[in-house]
Amino acid sequence: MIRKLLRKVFRRPNPSRHEPAVITHARHGIDRNRVSPVARRVCETLQKNGHQAYVVGGAVRDLIAGIVPKDFDVATNATPEQVHHLFRRSRIIGRRFQIVHVMQGQETIEVSTFRAAHDENTVKDEHGRVLRDNVWGTMEEDAARRDFTINALYYDPVTETVFDYHKGVEDLKHKTMRMIGDPVSRYREDPVRMLRAVRLASKLGLELDAAVKRPIKEMAELIENVPAARLFDEMLKLLFSGHAVESLRRLRAEGLHHGLLPLLDVILEQPMGEKFVMLSLAKTDARVRAGKTLSPGFL
Image (cartoon, rainbow, N blue to C red; front, side, top):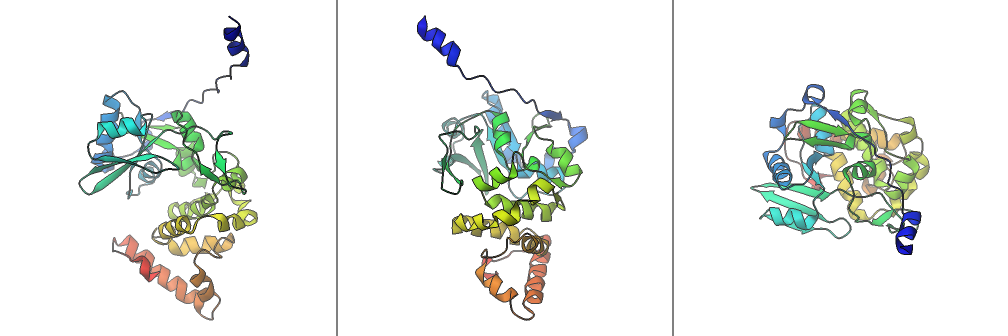
């Protein structure tokens, strides 16, 4: 009796529900046939087994923007073990964030479980960067954790509907890049978000919202705390995006380019250095847009 009363008094209140906008095919315009058949099969299999499952993030954003995605990711309320059990050719990977790779032919679909909001158990370094965080959550919590509104879109290939918690579709149409939550806090959690903001804005022709843009110059030094492997990966995405010239222009405008590619800093300081770099990146952009291969060694 006393135990029950204590539970009632100290029970944490349920977080308020934030229902997503449910956007039909007539409004979002995604052609289902442009979605990877493997990603569709993953969603269908998970749904048939009682789970939620959606194509998520960049692929949905690109499809709405009329761009053919390179990769397709799926988000679900199934745990990694449950996903692994349903797909013979799959494996659980990762320590910081456990995900499942589902393979079919030459294609690999990354399947992640919805994650909860950060709490007191989230492990951070002295600068506030999140180091370890692997708590399962709801679809709503998962959407709130994502960086930009345009990346918090969930597409159901079965019903052909998009679930939008943060007006990401509207931002895409208005060519605006907005952060979910407080930009200062979100950059501190993961400084790579500053680079991602520039890369995506350049790729999609978006303007950074004032709140997204304002803290970047002050917080640019946090990039120094990011592991070199992560920075290299993000720079490859940026330079192979087909919009490297515009990305570098924006990086320099925001004071983010120093130290990312040390050799690039040296070249840019030389007479004619900027002209050489921009010409090289323009050729790189042309190759990417023509669908030709590129070697990181060239960079």
